[in-house]
Length: 193
Image (cartoon, rainbow, N blue to C red; front, side, top):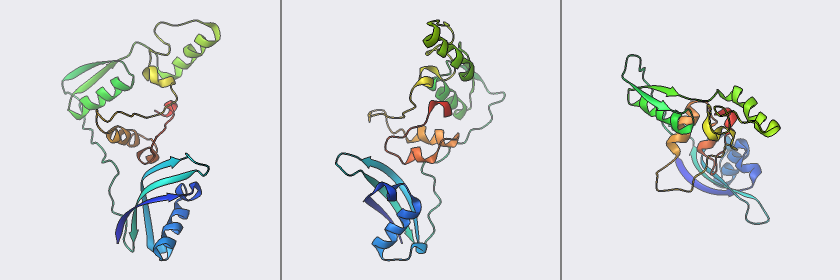
């Protein structure tokens, strides 16, 4: 049997896979060894005295979990010898524009006036320490763009521009934790982008 459930549980259950399996097995009256769980969505409700976790889960009893990615991976094909397009800036917009061009079979050439993230750190620290601003390497210019020194929250309230699942899937495909596909307000530190 495969079923989707909405649950409201304590954090020690909502963030511990083994405890979650035990909880669902108890609720369904079956042995834990017969239960497989996949968390589809997770949010924290801290509005009252007791913090709770809201979960949407897929529960499989006596069946294997279907092998499906939360977000299907994108295939990138070689673009050697393809026509080229210039992308100005290696910030989030520029990097995603470059990825999209590759998906379309076009070879991107990314131009960035600033330094790479590691070299940029020295220049950004110098701004705070000595009030010296390098016009080509600062908070705005350089690999990662202005977002490289943000807190890394991936959050939008906008519904007009569509779903962010595809973007989160690209982050996971390139090394981010799969938790960002599940958590209501995903977070990844900019140093990991």
